[in-house]
Amino acid sequence: MMNSLRTANAGAVEARALTVVRGERTVLRGLGFTVGPGRITGLLGPSGCGKSTLMRAVVGTQAGVTGTLDVLGHPAGHPSLRPRVGYVTQAPSVYTDLTVRQNLDYFAAVLRPGRRNRDSREEAVTRAIGDVDLTSHADALAGRLSGGQLSRVSLAVALLGTPELLVLDEPTVGLDPVLRRDLWNLFHALAADRGTTILVSSHVMDEAERCHRLLLMREGGILADDTPEALRARTGAATVEEAFLHLVDEAAAEAAADPAEAAARQETNR
Ligand SMILES: Nc1ncnc2c1ncn2[C@@H]1O[C@H](COP(=O)(O)OP(=O)(O)OP(=O)(O)O)[C@@H](O)[C@H]1O
Image (tube, rainbow, N blue to C red; front, side):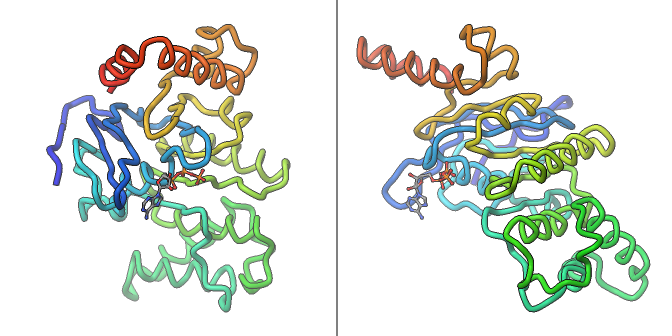
């Protein structure tokens, strides 16, 4: 499908001229970016701009992908990446008729089958339940958990294999402020203590301030790729939300003033 770029100092994710067509629509248009290893990169932008599509491409579940997309030194979707990449979708993938621990036992058995792995599986399950702060609910039926608790079970499943890259699609939707803060603390601990690379999408702009780097997306393109501080400084904005709106207005004004030049500039940014 794609060429692969494998360089000695490659990022955890390297995209060049990445395009995704879904049905009749070109949903991602020639994106180029690098996700630094051991860092938290936020993928932000309005609903429908292509965040989930990009994440699906990174984990190798998206069809219609062209260009270059390397993940941990392999083309996205390469079989060797399966245990190295954790993915949490927007809809929790959890069996509601099993308890929290039974869900994790099941997924752990898929990841590390066999009796000889029993002890390490138990250890991984207990650790993952603790990571997402669900130890007191370990024996509760998943079907009886709140939406936020269910999302955390899904996150625990993704943490089971101690992935090097964690791809999280809007993990804090529907969570109260305390849980959101706790989850962000967990993301930072995973990056700092385990060197986990985290690619996390959100359309809540205040979460952007907690990322090391941001990819701001709009209509299938990347509007900006920078640190939150640099984005604020560049636009003279007090918050990332203001900076984003400033960049959107700037792009719209350029397009209105000179459509051909704006299209060419977008092409060069790829
Ligand atoms: N199966 C599909 N066929 C054609 N177009 C699709 C398909 N799925 C999604 N799209 C379109 O692709 C675009 C990007 O969708 P995507 O889900 O990646 O956006 P998003 O930024 O993650 O949105 P949200 O924040 O609402 O989850 C949208 O315009 C959507 O309508």
